[in-house]
Image 1 (cartoon, one colour):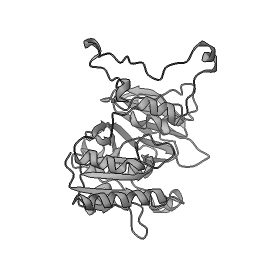
Image 2 (tube, helix red, strand yellow; image 1 turned 180 degrees about the vertical axis):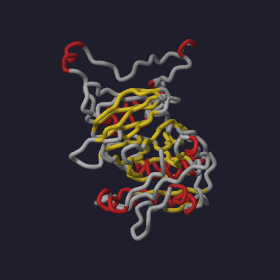
Image 3 (cartoon, rainbow, N blue to C red; image 1 turned 90 degrees about the vertical axis):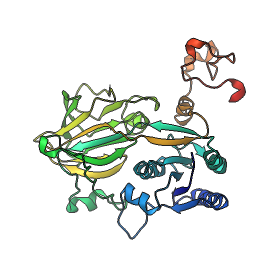
Image 4 (tube, rainbow, N blue to C red; image 1 turned 135 degrees about the vertical axis):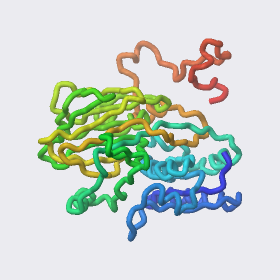
Amino acid sequence: MAVQRIGVVTHQGRPAALDAARVVHSWCRAHGIRSTDIDVWAEGRQRRTGREEALAAGDPDLVVTLGGDGTFLRGAHIALTSQAAVLGVDLGKVGFLTEVPASDVTAALDAVHEERAVVEERMTLTMRASRRLEIPPEEGALLRYGRGPALPPPQVRQETTEEAGWGVALDVTALNDVVLEKLTRDRQVSVGVYIAGRLLASYAADALAVATPTGSTAYSFAAGGPVLSPHMDAVVFTPIAPHMTFDRSVVAAPDEPVALRVLPNSGQAAVSVDGQLRGILDPGDWIGVFRAPRRVRLIRLHPTDFYGRLRDRFRLTDAPATATDGEAQPFFRPDAPIPPDLAHLRLPPPAAAR
């Protein structure tokens, strides 16, 4: 892909990220490419929407994030508004989204500039709601305590059809998840959950998460949800600490929306998008979460080895009972040419190319 403008999102609290930012700007100067720092944590001013951040940076066609997955998510939201690609440099602890180590940032930029990089697309989520999302001023300060300034309320998209009962279409995109959670410690949130328009069940729970396959290894996974390949499209619903026998996740088709309606006698509920608080729902309010038309474009130096990363990041070890039965090889892939009936499958490269 041709690169003319680069936006740089840097975790300001990590010296390694600041060093990597200097490398990025130096590379840009050497190649005559404009680079702009995007400081989404800037003190002394109100947080801006992703679109406002992109405009302030001159609508970059590549966003480079220097930090962990949290930094990457902030950069991805900016990139989505201008259809830019995202290059995530890994300086975090878990790092499912970021992939390029800091030592390879120059090589990664060269690969992008010379159109040798792999561009990987991931599904995202968007939502509708029974009304505009807001955070009451008297509750906002308490909810945001220790977290810094909040993002502005989501804007309403032009295609909204509120008068027809379909609610308002919110200008929101989630790469990981949309979460509805209880507002007070002493009271769970009670929610009717609908999948593809049909009631699945009413839950009393601490929270309910609707995730993408990318987000299946985030909050949903921590709550006992399944791991999904990020190469697929699906919508994952996971109840968190529910007071009912059925506490399993449900994996819905990408065209099956998940609606969450707060029951009449429930307490209030907070709505978070990729970990960012975006609004408060009262009893009777609802949100509908579904696949977004926009997909995030990730820059990779090589095709993603998701399952190798899964094994590494979660430090998976083999069952002790297999120790005396022989060692499992790291790959199941002969070095001979792939037979025609397997040519369409996603397989690791031969040993010589790894």
